[in-house]
Every structure is written in structure tokens, then in C-alpha cells.
Amino acid sequence: MKIKHRITRKVLYESKKETLKETVIEAVSKGVNLGGANLRGANLEGANLVEAYLVEADLVEAYLRGANLEGANLGGATLEGANLVEANLVEAYLRGANLEGAYLRGANLGGANLEGATLIGADLEGADLIGANLGGANLEGVNLGGVNLGGANLVEAYLIEAYLVEAYLRGANLVEAYLGGANLEGANLVEANLVEADLVGANLEGANLIGANLGGADLVGANLIGADLEGADLVGANLRGANLEGVNLVGAYLRGANLVEAYLRGANLRGANLRGANLRGAYLRGANLGGANLRGANLEGANLRGADLFGIKVTEKEKEQIIKELKWEVKQSEE
Image (cartoon, rainbow, N blue to C red; front, side, top):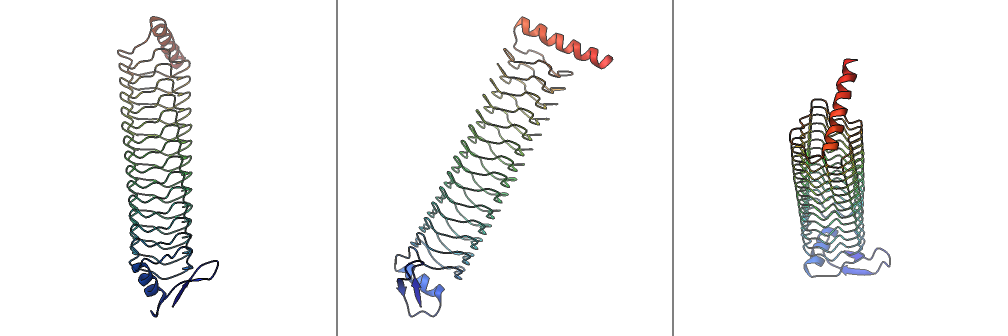
């Protein structure tokens, strides 16, 4: 049985083994360089390929279910449509690899390097990506439901419309990541770094964002109903038209944030810093703003009916304006 190069057709390894699977396992056990190997559609289920050298190998639609690829070098390899369900890819090198449409359910990619990899349409539900490097990776529309991405590097990762329901992203680095339209319902983003991330229209309902850094993030039209943002940093964030009903923003830092026409009914903003924030036309009915810093904030046309304003930090002039707004609201409701 021979293993040939995918382009040159040069024989990379030859064995007396009867199957390709046995030949590959033997070659790997001997440390043979299988860079560029043609293994398209190969059945390598459960194969022991620890530290295999498969740089730029052709593994399109290969069957690698349960295979052990720990520490393997698959840089630039083509794994489009490959079956890697429950495969072990711990600390594997997959930089620039093509995993479009690959099946990676339950796979272990802890500490793997997937920088710049293409994973469009891949299925990673239940996979373990703790500490993985996905910087600049293309994960558009990927299924990451319930995936463990704790501490993962997702800087500038492309996650448009990705499915991240109940994903574990505690401490993950998502600086300038593209998450427009992504579904992050119930996701754990505690202390995650989302500075200048694009979350336009994203669904973050019930997400845990305690202590997360969302400075300068774009959350226009995002759904944050019932999310927990206690102590989160939202300085300069754009939350225009976002739905923040019932959100916990206790002690959150919203200095200079854009909350124009944001929906904050019943939100808890106790002790929040809203200095210089733009709340024009925001709906704050029944919200708790006790002790919040509203100095320099724009509350023009904001609905504050029934809001708790005890102990708010404002200037005398601003206090007069708020009283004026409240009186206007009462008058409007009576008419």
C-alpha cells in the first residue's frame, strides 16, 4: 500500500500493510513526513495519529471519528467535510486549515491552534475548545452550542450568525470579533474581553456578562433581555435601540455610552456610571437608577415614569430638567 503526495504523486511511504488505515498508522509511528499526502476520503476511524505530520495534506471527507490526533501538525491541511466527531485534537496545529463543513461534535480541541482556519458551517456542538487559538478564524454560521471556549483566543474571529447558545466563553478574548446576528442566548461570558466587538443584532438574552469588558462594542439592536452585566465595562459602547429589559447593570460602567431609544424597562442600574451617556428617548420606566451617576447624561425625551431615582448623582440644573421631564410625562398620561 502506498501513500502519495496529492500534487506530485510522489510516493511518501510504502508498506506491506493491506489497508490504507494500517499504512498511515505505521508511517506515523515511524515519524514519516506525510506533508501533502493524499488521504481524501480515507477511513481512519479511531486511528492513533499522535504528533502526525500532515501539513497541507488532503483529508477532504476523511473519516476520522474518534481518531487520536493529539499534537498533530495539520497546518494548511484540507479537512473539508471531514468527520472528526469525538476526535482528540488537543494542542493540534491547524493554522490556516480548511475545516469547512467538518463534523467536530464532541471533539477535543483544547489548546489547539486554529488561527486563520476556515470553519464555515462546521458542526462543533459539545466540542471542547478551552484555551484554543481561533484568532482571525472564519466561523460564520458555525454550530458552537454548549461548546467550552473558556479562555480561548477569538481576536478578530468571524462569527457572523454563529450558534453559541449556552456556550462557555468565560475569560475568552473576543477583541474586535465579528458577532453580528450571532445567537449567544444563555452564554457564559463572565470577564470576557469584547472590546470593540461587533454584536449588532446579536441575541444575548439571559447571557452572563458579569465583569465583561464591552468598551466601544457595537450592540445596536442587540437583544439583552434578562442578561447579567453587573460590573461590566461598557464605556463608549453603542447600545442604540438595544433591548435591555430587566437587565442587571448594577455598578456597570456606561460612561459616554450611546443608549438612544434603548429599551430599559425594569432594568437595574443601581450605582451605575452613566456620566455623559446618551439616553435620549430611552425607555426607563420602572428602572432602578438609585445612586447612579447621571452627570452630563442626555435624558431628553427619556421615559422615567416609575423609575427609582433615589440618590442619583446630578447637578442642580440636571435635577430640574429631570423633574421637568417627569412632570411632562405625568401631564401626558393624564391627557
